[in-house]
Length: 333
Image (cartoon, rainbow, N blue to C red; front, side, top):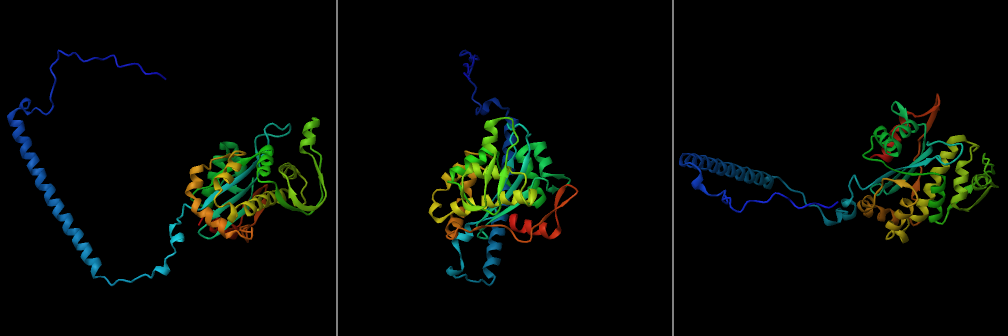
């Protein structure tokens, strides 16, 4: 946008006004103003004196209290620099595909991840799309307001400080996992899935037929397995598998050798997903994330919380009191 010059030009013949010229103010008003200013100055001086006396009194009372010396060895400098905002909590949402023939814009399942340097752990929990969070489910919250509303409603339900989001569909999940070189996975049963589509290319892209095996799977294989509707444990099994995939990616990449490559790791996720985790959030949590890298020598820092079960009731999933308390303790404290 181009801005035009101001067309209002002062007439040079008009007298210039010096707003500090006291001769333009009546004498009586100047005298009255002087009196008011003197009174205000006196009041200000009294206030300053009172404030000084108060400060001296506080210093004197503190000095009289018995003190306790703290040895330098008792102060953990690194831990002291962490605060309640350093942990990073992200809801990883697996979406259906708007471009697929039999799908609508919806979510299938989620995983909640908390990078927690204070407690020196990374917690990963499967979250059902139909988890009841108050009066509605996460699926309904997503339909009403997308990823942000979905994550915000879960944060409110769990009484969390903040939960960010990252979402992937079939293609994004495939590309993201490939950016990390695939993922280790132990497939304990045969998967035979012929994707229902009239399109030959679509069937080829999404169908999968593999026997039980343990190896590194590429992104396409993982995405197709997550699409498979006939997992032995149903939706709970699919959701658990999704959480395990993220836990394995974290264990294999949040390592001591990568503690100086956090921006690169973040870029691989951000460039292949939809997320509201900004680079500034990673920078804010950088010290804590580096600490977690150092702790992950055995590549097992990401774990599932214990004693957490979402039971299905009338078509929705509900945490019992113990599970809800454990979720809040792990992900929100």
